[in-house]
Image 1 (cartoon, rainbow, N blue to C red):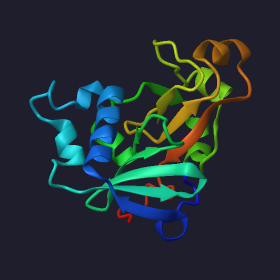
Image 2: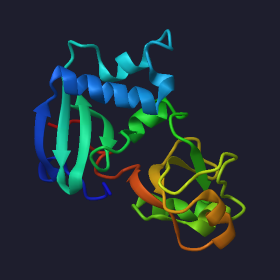
Image 3: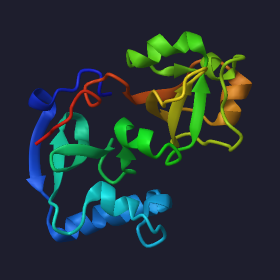
Length: 191
């Protein structure tokens, strides 16, 4: 999705979020990621990530109905379509790896995933792959790790349930949304 993303070409507009919009975005993120909620956590991770009331929150509108939330011009979360879940960018997910359920692809899939290819079912069901213990449904967002690697290499959306991936074992299992070294990864500043 962000393979050819460029802040200069893909951004169609940027606006400083009103306080009510900012509150709604923070509320939606808190509901999606309760571990970040400052009221539950002494460290105040959400305030550290999205800033306090004094730091302006910018909403960047991109082509294909993609929205990005930025603080001090640094992207923090993205939304694939309006009214869908806000997803952390990979840099943030590396700091907080437990925000999304994690699946693992085998070594053979690494170079394809990094080029933006979707994840095929055999890459998750082979000896090096792992769908995790929790059941995943179609439409769930997941963090994608690779066999033998520590860091998350991509974020994707399940195109079939984990049970179907195991049973059918062919076709596209996960749509690759954001991967290491794609356009969003290489964008350190947007506005």
